[in-house]
Image (cartoon, helix red, strand yellow):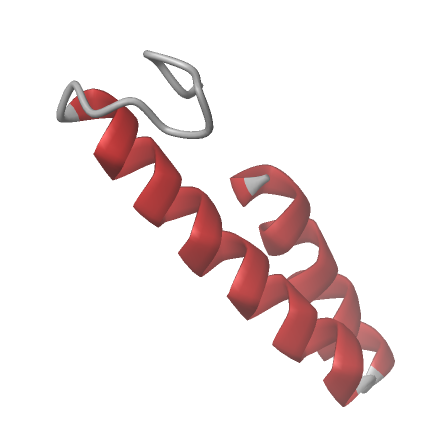
Length: 51
């Protein structure tokens, strides 16, 4: 999810499409939050680990 967000953000910057930039930033933020929760040992979405 983090990689997809970065790719969408870069494509949005290159193509000057603000919607892709916004979606990319949101995906990166959500991915980082889920990764941090998973590393803290907290179950996320029924899974013990989130990669």
